[in-house]
Every structure is written in C-alpha cells, then in structure tokens.
Image 1 (cartoon, rainbow, N blue to C red):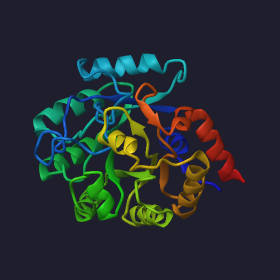
Image 2: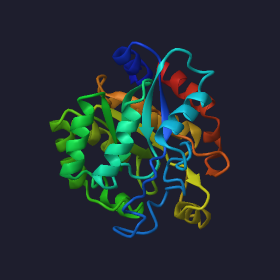
Image 3: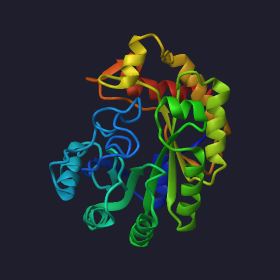
Image 4: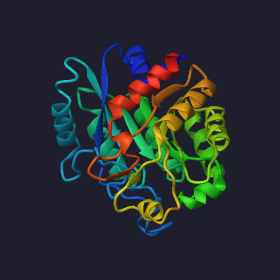
Length: 291
C-alpha cells in the first residue's frame, strides 16, 4: 500500500534531504494559562508536547545550531525546517511571534517553518503574519485536532469545538498555507470506526498533510492518573498496525503522511512500552503496508 511520505515530499519540494529541528519558542497555551483551563490537555506532558525540543533558554539561532549538531551524523549536505513544536506557537503578541519566526526564517540553512498551534489561536493579525512569512519561505501550520468527536474532545480537554477547526482550515487555505493536522489513534472509548471517521473528515477538510499519533501515557499527566485508575486501555502493537493500515487506505495519495506513529520521551513513558522502540514499530508498520 503506497503512501506519500514526508521524506519523499520534502525531497520532491526542496531537492535534497531536509530535517526538522524541534524548537521551543518560549510560549505557553490558553489551556494552561487560565484562559481556557490551567491543566492542559489530559495527555500533554510538562514540555507541552515539545519534549524533544531544544532549550527555551537559548535564542532561536542558538537552538537551530544546537539542533544541527544533534543530527550532523544523519544529514551531511541537506537543509532544515525550523519546527516550533512546544506548546502553542501562535499564542503570543504578534510582535513577539514576528521576531522569533523571522530569526528562524533568516537562517541560511532553514528552508521552511513548521508551526504547531491550536485552531483557536489564529487571529487576523496572526494570519497576516503567516501570509507574509509564507511569501518568503514555505510555512507549514500544524493543527492539534486529535479527534472530530465532541465527547472525546471534552474528555481530553481540548477546549474548542469542531467548528473552530473548520474555520481555521478555511482561513489558512485562503492564504495558501500548507496545513498539517494531528490525529490521535487510541483515545479512550473511541472505536476503530470513530477513528477512521476522524481521518476521513480531516482528509476531506482541505488539508495538505496528516500526522497519525499513537496515544501514549506519560508521567505527570492527568491521563496517567486515569490509566492507573484503570480507565484507559492502550493499544497493542498489532492493534495499532491494523489501525494505521486502515487509515492509510482511506488517506488520498496527494495528502502527505507526516507521521505514522509517535513516541514519548523514554524517561517519561508509562505505556505502551512497545512504542519506545520506534524503529521496530515503523519497520512493522511499513512491512504490513507492503503486504
């Protein structure tokens, strides 16, 4: 079963190997600062899903240089995407965003920006900035949707309705932004049909790329408490592979699959422990997709 991988897309687009450098812009989230909630999403780590990002104590340029050193054995003559990953990366005054994004954009080895955010943090001033940036170098906006089902959204404390996502996609499309959507597979009380419904909806909403994320339980999250109470069951490897195959089968071939799984920091991972061996997981997924 063939699919359009991120690696192939980046080679097609930039003509060389391109590696994402995970950055921390020093932002927070409306789900943490009290605007919506103070607890964050139920699954979110203390690092705001940016556990592999560089230190926010460094400047953006310093983070890029440090990130390059980390991957220098994997990439010799390629380029990089500045990936603003931790927390909500459009949740700040536009003047602050402009300074940080332009610092990344102006780095000679950076060919694009990837900005992880929430659909409810895209005001008109932010959209205007993204439009400006996108005219200089390509901009990807990654939206954390996770599910289209309102019961699940309430359970994970997402904090906005599906209509907000729909509106954000329309506005981003109108200015030509490359839209990537995060979907979590294995949310409590969701059936396989529910998860496929989310993937199908997302793919028909006008996006360019999708990330399939395994639900994993991390230390010091409210989801961990739920897991220890016996309220959350995690997927087995064979279940997850079956789900991914079903998802790939309905994802249009022109939509880029940016991720087939996800892994938490090993020091914080509670379950499923099989997900810690990401290479083995991906090998098994790709083998299953070829069968």
